[in-house]
Length: 560
Ligand SMILES: *[C@@H]1O[C@H](CO)[C@@H](O)[C@H](O)[C@H]1NC(C)=O
Ligand SMILES: *[C@@H]1O[C@H](CO)[C@@H](O)[C@H](O)[C@H]1NC(C)=O
Ligand SMILES: *[C@@H]1O[C@H](CO)[C@@H](O)[C@H](O)[C@H]1NC(C)=O
Ligand SMILES: *[C@@H]1O[C@H](CO)[C@@H](O)[C@H](O)[C@H]1NC(C)=O
Ligand SMILES: *[C@@H]1O[C@H](CO)[C@@H](O)[C@H](O)[C@H]1NC(C)=O
Ligand SMILES: *[C@@H]1O[C@H](CO)[C@@H](O)[C@H](O)[C@H]1NC(C)=O
Ligand SMILES: *[C@@H]1O[C@H](CO)[C@@H](O)[C@H](O)[C@H]1NC(C)=O
Ligand SMILES: *[C@@H]1O[C@H](CO)[C@@H](O)[C@H](O)[C@H]1NC(C)=O
Ligand SMILES: *[C@@H]1O[C@H](CO)[C@@H](O)[C@H](O)[C@H]1NC(C)=O
Ligand SMILES: *[C@@H]1O[C@H](CO)[C@@H](O)[C@H](O)[C@H]1NC(C)=O
Ligand SMILES: *[C@@H]1O[C@H](CO)[C@@H](O)[C@H](O)[C@H]1NC(C)=O
Ligand SMILES: *[C@@H]1O[C@H](CO)[C@@H](O)[C@H](O)[C@H]1NC(C)=O
Image 1 (cartoon, rainbow, N blue to C red):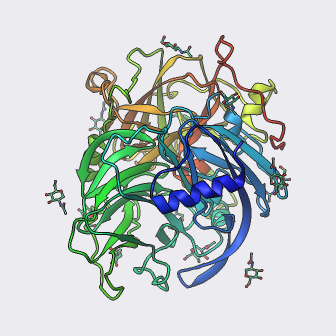
Image 2: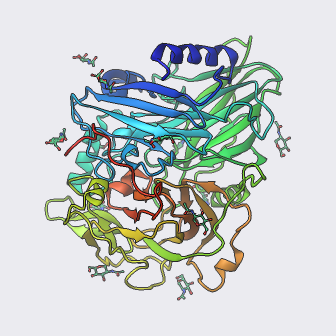
């Protein structure tokens, strides 16, 4: 077992040599995560925020494919806490997945829990974040998984690399903002800033010194590991004067393509290569929301600086041309360019035969709430069901056969077929409340079509599935057409990922093989919609083989 000192040496080497560990084989990496408050000042306001080890954003978890990572999370904050390792498959081991009340009870103040994670068959950029209420607003960081020793990247070796974490900042206490929204039955206040590596950049007040600067050297190539850790906004990102070559999404290699801007939804990661091949100067990198729903536009722009070595800070940078906030055409064409690398070494094993066809509608709604401002409360539902959070972890309930916690009668399609995306469906159709899950046979192949609806309004929904990657075999605007659309599916090299956007007023079809037994959360990664109930979970049954069932829970698993 590697001790902590070895690990910090490895980290030091990592920093001084650029992007190589001097590690020869799979190892055990240990991390201590102390959940603690820290006073942080942004946008002329100071407030205590919840952090890991006092860092904002939190520490990067570095590992190599094949490693075992142990993270001891100790909670010194007043909030109950759990951490999700977004995109790590956690084969047979949902106990280390992290969503509160789904795979574990939260870690209470003063307690610790060790997440024991095997990293198998994955390499690239992922991220970790708090998975309880809206605490991920400040509790997040990157996960960098290097390929196995002597396995090069399938793209030109970059000279250096940097993490770019995009986020949102509220001047007020985020839990307070949410409480107020819930009380009124309205969406909580929008964030006050977007951020790049925790910093809003000079387009916001009092933010000159809260600007992330990345220094580059002429003619060198940089790998940017970009994470969208924002709560509620899909974002465009670009660097003035520089193209971006996309090489990986959600820790899966892609066919490289060059673009002047990327689109990234909350939960997604994108690796791009950038060549410092322009006139040495200072260039802004910037992020702004993509919002093509007929709602109020949030056009706040976070900025950071790409600074060539030797250029003084007095040079005024120029802003990149970001797509307009409502540029649907850019969004659709960008997503259409994403393709799995699908090489002999990194094949795209798309399920060609489907055992189980699922069709889920995503809708917003209003339920009556006499104490709320308008007498109504906004809600969200999948197949007309607003998910109710249980009081104990669903995985425990499943593993220990605790009755009465959930049912497995989540319907495979909505109760009524209707013209999902037709002109405003303002009628309040009402929703049923329930903790209803769908049971999936071990190793069966699943096709899930996620259909947006115009209940109250159309809106884009980035869906995240825990425990799996899936293939995005098709997407379109309007209603999914069962007889015509499947013929157009890409079953050769579709993008493989863990989070995918369902276009505003459109649909997305995904396929996966259910070879990871457990209880796996699936939800909209807009925190606003998740908290309104746009979520469910799959119970994937055990297989018959010796290594096809859920591992026993660890001894320190928190109790409720
Ligand atoms: C934050 O600042 C407040 C007021 O200045 C102070 O009372 C508090 O102890 C500080 N908290 C931390 C965690 O530093
Ligand atoms: C986790 O950290 C806490 C606080 O430092 C410590 O008391 C506990 O022993 C650690 N657990 C493990 C398994 O190392
Ligand atoms: C934390 O969880 C415990 C037990 O589940 C509960 O009694 C307590 O109120 C929770 N604390 C907070 C701050 O939510
Ligand atoms: C990690 O992998 C090792 C070796 O295959 C296995 O013994 C262990 O049970 C795994 N642990 C977890 C938590 O998956
Ligand atoms: C939300 O915004 C409104 C209007 O700007 C403001 O009055 C209110 O205090 C804000 N609420 C919170 C909890 O920050
Ligand atoms: C970026 O790519 C476009 C299209 O391939 C090309 O026309 C343009 O010259 C490139 N710009 C830079 C700065 O490399
Ligand atoms: C954002 O929108 C507001 C109001 O429409 C406008 O005044 C402002 O200039 C816009 N800001 C940016 C950065 O586009
Ligand atoms: C996008 O927004 C601009 C400015 O608000 C508006 O003029 C334009 O019509 C909108 N485009 C679309 C396609 O809705
Ligand atoms: C709630 O009421 C306010 C004030 O009457 C109105 O402006 C707002 O649009 C209403 N919101 C919803 C979601 O009905
Ligand atoms: C659904 O609604 C759209 C827009 O209102 C309309 O164009 C379309 O014909 C409708 N489709 C069906 C099958 O009724
Ligand atoms: C949703 O469920 C409610 C309550 O059972 C029912 O009244 C409503 O018609 C349903 N809506 C749809 C679209 O199925
Ligand atoms: C799942 O099914 C596929 C196709 O039948 C088979 O190749 C594979 O070995 C099975 N995997 C497991 C873990 O049983």
